[in-house]
Amino acid sequence: MSDQLTQDYKETFDSVHGRRVLDNLKMLSHFNTAFVPKGNDGHVDAFEMCREEGKRSVIVHIERMLNKDPWKEADGGKTYLERNFKLIDKSPWKEGVTNG
Image 1 (cartoon, rainbow, N blue to C red):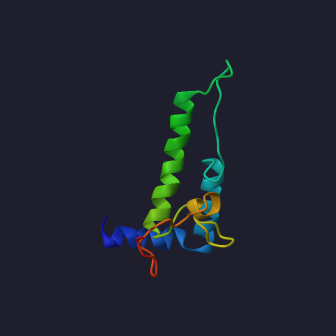
Image 2 (image 1 turned 90 degrees about the horizontal axis):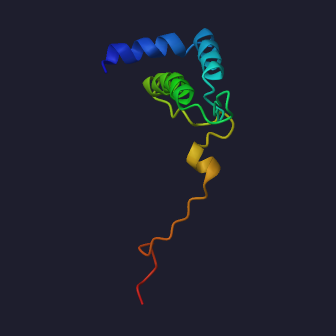
Image 3 (image 1 turned 90 degrees about the vertical axis):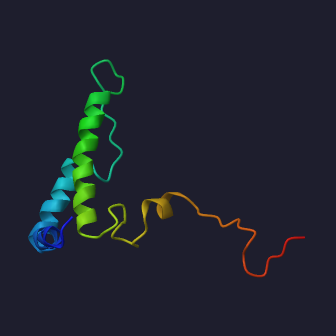
């Protein structure tokens, strides 16, 4: 993407009004929630799920253009992985660890 296009995204969304619009788009696209649409028969509606994921992917694109991690939380700045998984380093190549 061009530098001008990236700058255009920043000028559009890195303002008070732009953040308000982006927050509203996030709400409408179920960006921060697990949304599983169900059909009339009670089963997951795959077509509706694809449509919802398409809406969500637009938000991900905007956040990436703003050079932000779209899954970081404002409170604490943790990513999705940091919030939901405990990362364990089991590397045998840590400093001070020898083999045997």
